[in-house]
Amino acid sequence: MINKDNALCYLTVGWLFATVATGLYYLAGSTTPTADVTAQTNPNLHHISVIDMAPGDTVFSDFNGKPVVIWRRSLPQMATALTQWEPRFVYDDILESLQDGSLEADMDPEQYTYLEWLVLSPVDMGGIGCVTMPGAGDFGGFFDPCRGSHFDLWGRVKKGPSEHDLQVVPTRFDDNRHSVLIDLTEIQKFR
Image (cartoon, rainbow, N blue to C red; front, top):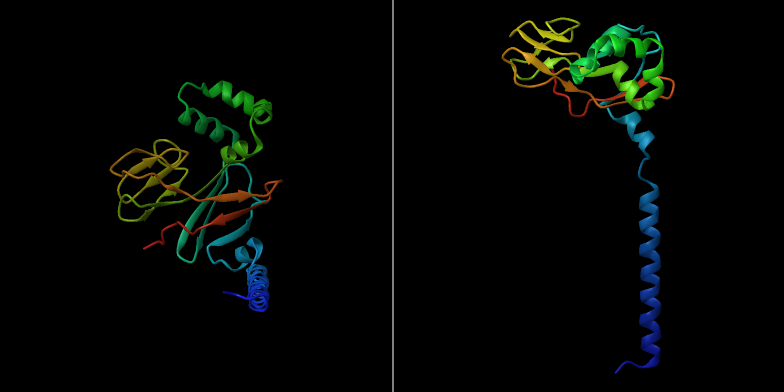
């Protein structure tokens, strides 16, 4: 049987152990880096300024062997992209609503950003890993000169032997669309 002195000793040691364990848990949690620090040290995250890109411009970049195309679509390209996404849309009506700004006002700002900007890996992984050409092909999107595959303005394969769409890169734009954070974690390296 446990007497009062032993019970008090066990209770004190237990309380001391719980206090030290809790303190160590919070100490360890406070020493892990925050998301912004992790992003600065991650070689797969790249911050790119796009303020100088005019509508219709494409920029090809290579980050550690991982090619990326940043395409700022012009209004006619945006209208074509929407009609490729939903064939029921009428090109002239979409273009008019883009020109007068009514479509942008009706859309969520994030949706409009992803309509205007396309960031993807131009490597056709369905073939031999050939880099596609932006703004080319039968659908105005991308063309794989190695195998003759044609992609639309969303990077989806529409014609040719390729069976895989181009890989869209996860991105996050700032509020005024002057810069973009690109995450290349899942992007294949160019062979």
